[in-house]
Image 1 (cartoon, helix red, strand yellow):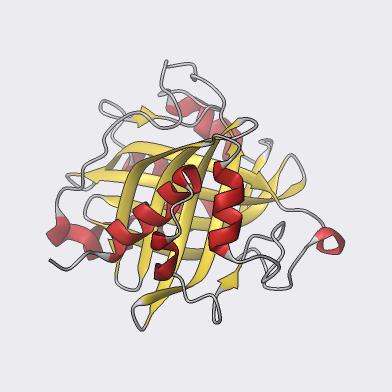
Image 2 (cartoon, rainbow, N blue to C red):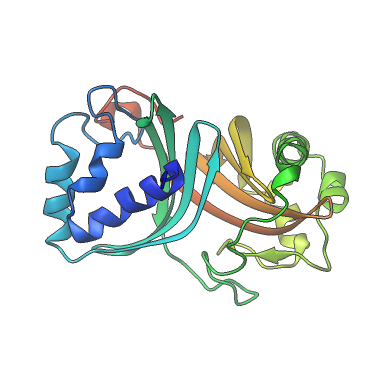
Length: 250
């Protein structure tokens, strides 16, 4: 039985909890490019690192996982010294993971509508609409979030069905409109990547939150041509002088 790259990455992430060295073989550590600016590259092998971390009794919950060509992306929940929510992105080449990005923030919430950062729909549907949904969400992010065209919020989101999981907002779209307005504190500036499988689309953006350099990872679920569910993580990007590798956040 052939194991999918998605399953191999899920096993890798779970090995942080167990310390099992076997799943680390999915990573080509010689070619591995780490884009987390706070991680030293090559200072410690992954098997040794995960074994050390497992001794602190961490908990790793892979809430959702997706595969898009050479990429696997996962929505994760970690309980180390504190509870964090993250998105992990891996790029494969020649059967192994050779590049990694992530976006991690402290778990907050529930939000004003009672939703957590990780609950909601998990299973992938409408795989045949993957490319259609990718194009649709890309256009929404570029026009509504980056260009600030608030008419696209009404055009692209189904208010009757919409479920918001961000701890900063509720299901009421008025809050989103205020946040991305000229007077708001959210400033999306550049879209770096769009990954998709079926009705789920992940966008990776750079911008500012309250004037601070920030990375925005947004996961959207699309149904019948409208956005009906949204999750995110927001992470401040440390100054370049504090980076522990030179690969860049994006």
